[in-house]
Image 1 (cartoon, rainbow, N blue to C red):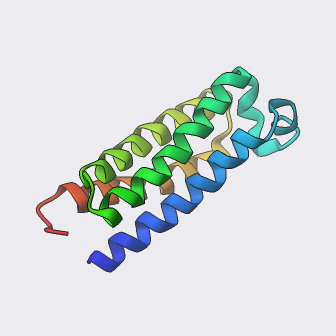
Image 2 (cartoon, rainbow, N blue to C red; image 1 turned 90 degrees about the vertical axis):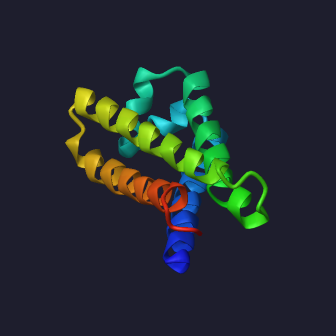
Length: 125
């Protein structure tokens, strides 16, 4: 089970690291050109950058605390943060009528929930 947990953590961390870095490094005007990023029109440039920073920091939090055995409780806390972030993202997409984005939010949120359960739960790993 430990191997499965690590695979989930790494996959989720890579997904959010890439997504966050993209938001941090791309101007909002350029993001708006991408149909999958149309939601950014509802947020200021600073808010989009903050979301990107949260994603990058959360990706780090999914892996490093457990890998380094330094405050490992931060890993499931980061996973819970991603569950909340994906719920907020789903709400934004629903409000905007962007139902096609919901499966991504659901899958990423469920992976984050699984990590939180596996790392918080009674499983000693």
